[in-house]
Amino acid sequence: MKKYLDVLKRTKLFSGISENDIQLMLGCLSATHKDYKKGEYIFRQGEYIDSICVLLNGTVHIQSDDYWGNRSIISEIEMGDMFGESYAVYGSSAVLNDAVAISDCTVAFFNVQRLMTVCSNTCAFHTTVIRNLLIALTHKNRALMQKLTHISKRTTREKLVSYLSAQSKLSNSNHFTIAFNRQQLADFLSVDRSAMSSELSKMKKEGLIDFDKNSFTLLS
Amino acid sequence: MKKYLDVLKRTKLFSGISENDIQLMLGCLSATHKDYKKGEYIFRQGEYIDSICVLLNGTVHIQSDDYWGNRSIISEIEMGDMFGESYAVYGSSAVLNDAVAISDCTVAFFNVQRLMTVCSNTCAFHTTVIRNLLIALTHKNRALMQKLTHISKRTTREKLVSYLSAQSKLSNSNHFTIAFNRQQLADFLSVDRSAMSSELSKMKKEGLIDFDKNSFTLLS
DNA sequence: CCTCTTTTGTTGTAAAAACAACAGAAATAT
DNA sequence: ATATTTCTGTTGTTTTTACAACAAAAGAGG
Image 1 (cartoon, each protein chain N blue to C red):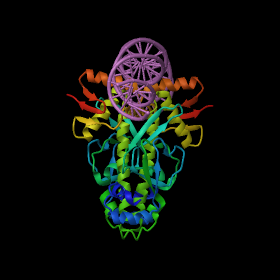
Image 2 (cartoon, rainbow over the protein chains, first blue to last red):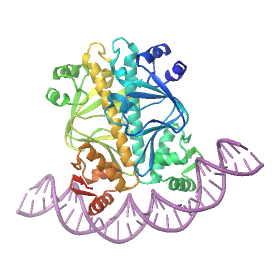
Image 3 (cartoon, protein in one colour):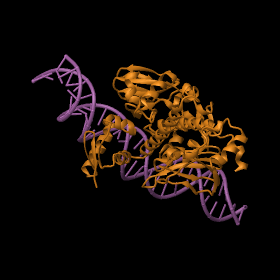
Image 4 (tube, rainbow over the protein chains, first blue to last red):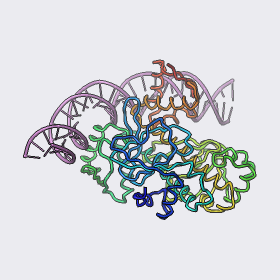
């Protein structure tokens, strides 16, 4: 685990905690880690988990397939990001989504019971981690809400406009690059890929946007 | 505020804390409360807030209107529920939705800075409140994710099936009552009311479901 | 360099949704 | 009790999407 200290100290969960203190906590939280090949599942819909997951390297998608196989990507997890915490905290309910490795990756696991109960008086940084967890949860909440505002638009074009506007704001520029390819973007926005592709073309023709692969520019 | 102790002690935020201790905390957290008439806004998109809101009585909707006036209801807040906490915690970003009183209501406000920083060593129940807040956030997260799974379905029927199934599971019965009227349900699922109404009728004709007003039964 | 695979764009058709307009039922106010 | 407003269901038309099938472009691997 030591070789990942560099990653861990830059995560939201351990923000503001020194490398030394993180190392101390790793034992105290009985942290473990595991490698996954591209395509493998970290957890699946219906399982119960008791640990917060932190991605040490690679890429993971949180997604769900419905009965008929329609896939919808809930979120993309990148190095240092945390996931699964909503199900791990007092693991009261089964996981509602799959977590799947998009590339080879390594995941660290932190037991929530320990985080919430052990050494609450002795560790000064214990409180900090809980606070970090809280802040991270509010960030996720806001991200989910924002996705909801995109996806609740009626037409494919409106969804695209909503998503692209948000990405533009995020990068403080009318020119930006997105992390999704076409199929992934379509899954994220819950629309048909080909219909979306054709809508993007229309919007380009009409001079609303310009794009080349994953690079977009919003015009006028 | 005293007359609302009965409500507060049954909220997620003060779960496990005695009435006496809650009363002690009210001062410590510099709690305030305010009455709102039906239709008034507790907060609006774009504002900045620094307090967690707890609904003492009445009903509130978290909703957002887009540029063209399409309304989408993010969630319904009932007596004892908490809202705004994702924006109040280290109020780093502007509120993305409106909170509007659906009926006359009373809202309590708890300053987050105080909750997170003041008297962290003296109050035993302080830690409990933070833990409660954390658990509540994970619940909200899961609710948002579940709504996403409904809304990301392609057709109105699939959305209805997904929503009704979830409600059925929630009440552990194939017969249940929903809190939304037709327009609200349509807004919640981001579909057209009349189209949804007609789809519901079709499903009834086909023998999939039965319903009368807000009372639904899932068949076969 | 060539082959195979993946990604992206295009088009036509069938299905579904949005929209609009209206009528009847239910709830609320007077 | 009656009038008025709100809610719900219905229908036809227009717009949009999903779907399918294909072609072109880009990337990966030998």
